[in-house]
Length: 124
Image (cartoon, rainbow, N blue to C red; front, side, top):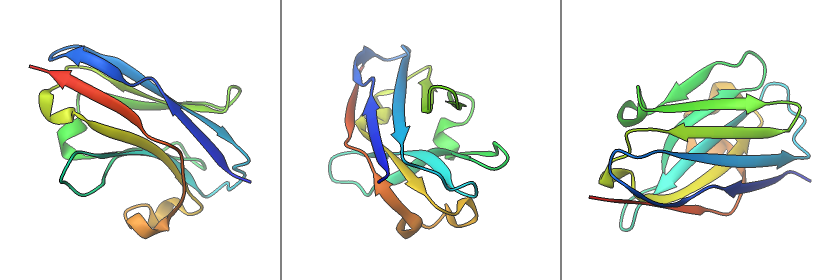
């Protein structure tokens, strides 16, 4: 059974930093990916970043490029999202998720496994 446990959210001032952690268990898909999504009130869920298991390739949504960094610690079975230079528009519930196939990661429906969300609030 795939389980994902997200943590690390909180309240931070604009310009500050947070590191989200996603503890992963039961995920054995070599062609898969672990990613971060966010959903702000009244908005659709969007993919923020993901990392492919097979080759470590990463994806970032345009608004996160240059500010966020995704990384994985295979020994700890944890995926991190380092978020720097946070902006009020980054405020959202952040979810970690897993897909069996990184090549289909652009499709939201390919993400079959979801953790609970962690709230990130950025004050201006």
